[in-house]
Image (cartoon, rainbow, N blue to C red; front, side, top):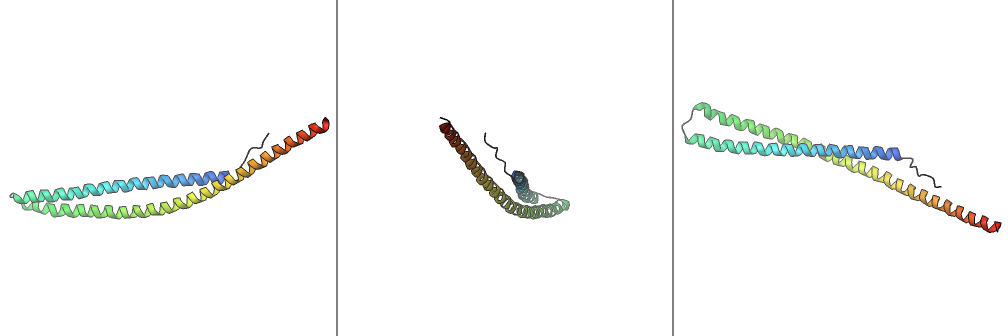
Length: 147
């Protein structure tokens, strides 16, 4: 019977794998937030463009002073929203870059432990095979001495 292989650092390896998965999930969340911000920025830019077209159409007709006051305030608000989105996007990009560095480090640590486990597993397998071969040879020797 062969001995079961037990990697002494298996718990640590599992923790490293868990940490790597956790970081990947966090990166996924950041990417989804970045995508949402980009979509929001497209909508805001489209709203601004639509607002300019509307202002142009309103100016062709006779309009009240209140209506003319509305457009600059509307554009200022949309530009402020756009600036806020750009700032938020910049923060998310920084978070994304930091998480990528964390992921690289975590993947390196995990890979190191996996290589170590593979090496130990191979070493164990060779030792077990050698013991089995020695046992077989000993059985043959005992059989020859009995005969």
